[in-house]
Structure formats: structure tokens, C-alpha cells
Image 1: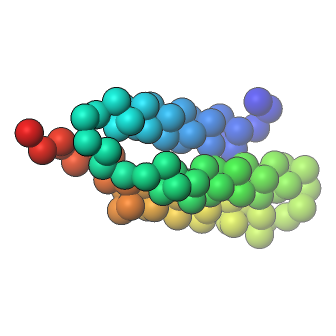
Image 2: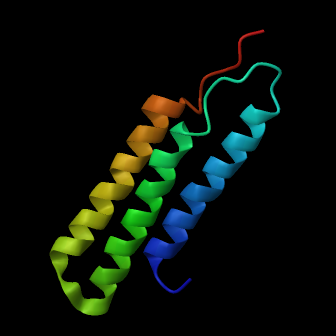
Length: 88
């Protein structure tokens, strides 16, 4: 936990864990565990790009890291729909 990329991706991943635990305890499953794989891989990839950028690989890695974080957040919002209220 040395870089800002570590903290950001861990925070996103922690949110995914909370969302998964909340949804898995519901009486009827809303989504599949496989849908969380894309977001988890996005966090890992963004963290890798960010750590490479901090290590001196260049500005392109910073851009790739930020773009991957944004793409992961968009994936979470569009596919997992964390803000949808459960139907009663």
C-alpha cells in the first residue's frame, strides 16, 4: 500500500465485496459471481499500470491506469447497477 493507485483500487475492490455480500444475502440473486470478475480484473490491471507508472515506466502508464479505473467504475455502474433499489 504505497501508491495512490493501491489505495484507489483497494477501495473499489472493497466496495465490490460489500456489494457482493449484500446481494448474495438477498432471497433472490440479482447477479452472478462471474459478473464481479470483470471489475476485479479491472482493479488489478489498473493497479499494475499505476505501479508501473510510479516505477518510472512513463506517462502512458499513468493514462492507462486512470483510463482503466474509469472503465472499471463504468463497468460496475452499467453491469452491476449498485444504485438500483431492490424490488419488493
